Structures are given as C-alpha cells and as structure tokens.
Image (cartoon, rainbow, N blue to C red; front, side, top):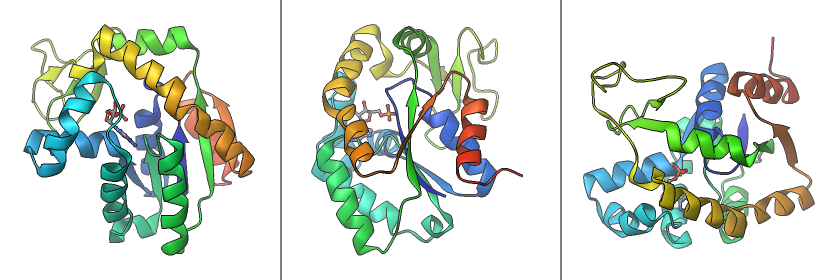
Length: 217
Ligand code: AMP
C-alpha cells in the first residue's frame, strides 16, 4: 500500500502504521522517529531539529523534505509505504506531490484518523516510549505499562516520557496541529483521495483501512 496517515498527535498513527506494515510488508515511515533518532545521534539534522521538537513546534519544512526525499528513494519503499506524521503542513503536502510525480509513485489514498479530543489528551499524558531509538516501543501507564523496573519488555532500555509529552508541550502540539496540519484534511479532500475513519481502537481502524484497500482475506 502507499498511504498517508493523517491525525492529531495521540490519534494512534504510530500504532496503526505498525499494524498495517505487519499486514502487508509496506514500510512504516515516521518522520518523528527519524528525527528523534537524529537528535539522539546529534547529527547535523538532529541538532537543527532538537529545539523545535522539544518546544512542540514543527521542524522547518525544508529539513523535513530533504530527509523525506532521501527516505522515499530507498529500495524498501518499493514494497509500499505508510507515511506516519508526514506531511504536516500544506507546504510539505505540495512538495510531496511534486516529489511523488517525479518518482512516478501514486498514492492509494489518505487515511484521516479522527479521535475525540478528550481521548487524545488522555492518551498523550499517559504515554511512555522506549528510549532505544531502534525500538521505540510505545507504552501506556494505564493500559500497557512497562515492566515493574520501568524497562522496555522488548529490549530492556528505560521507558521514558518524551520531552514533547509534558502537558505544556502537548497543549502546544495540539494548537500547532489545528493551525498547520488540520488544513491538510481539506487539501486531500479536494484532491479526492481522503477517507476519514473514526478511530477509537487501532485494531478496528486497521481492519477498516485494509477493507477499504481490498486487502483483507
Ligand atoms: P511525532 O512523533 O510524529 O509526533 O513527531 C514528533 C515531533 O517531531 C513533532 O512534534 C515535530 O516537532 C517533529 N516532526 C515530526 N514530523 C514532522 C513533520 N512532518 N514536519 C515537521 N516536524 C515534524
């Protein structure tokens, strides 16, 4: 599949993308994961992105487009891809359209995950993430706690609250989403490739997306 997952922070894009990737081998491309790994490595990209990310601001469009162009040209994308957290602005969406045309890639559609605001706030404040950039397993202190020693049950690294998941940063990220990213819903609707899913349970959302693509046995 070649799809974009749209949705507010905390809408469950990461979980849905992972499950979709397991279903048909399409690669999950999360700009958030790529940027966090770059920050951890303190690469040039990481050093430029770090401050923006910690404040809950978006990383500048030109940096994100540069990394996405490199990523979409990699061989593993031929099996299909799920874009998780990209595009985040109209500028990125327009640049993506030009890039995909140039690479002769056609999107299947854009899945918009619609989740009520109170559910989003609850999920974000209770979310914890494995600090290993190669793992990044997501936990929830209510519904999926890490081991009793606070370590990831997959890789043993400490499970932490992300710097951008403090209450202040979350409020800022949601405002940024409403202002910069939500307009993409109208943009892709106009392009005729948008489908909205009320998404309360990731498993059911994945089934609905696979049904829509005609990919469920
Ligand atoms: P995420 O894990 O998708 O919530 O992303 C975490 C942070 O990474 C965001 O709050 C932004 O600072 C940055 N980021 C991720 N994807 C993008 C993007 N497409 N454009 C700009 N900034 C991004």
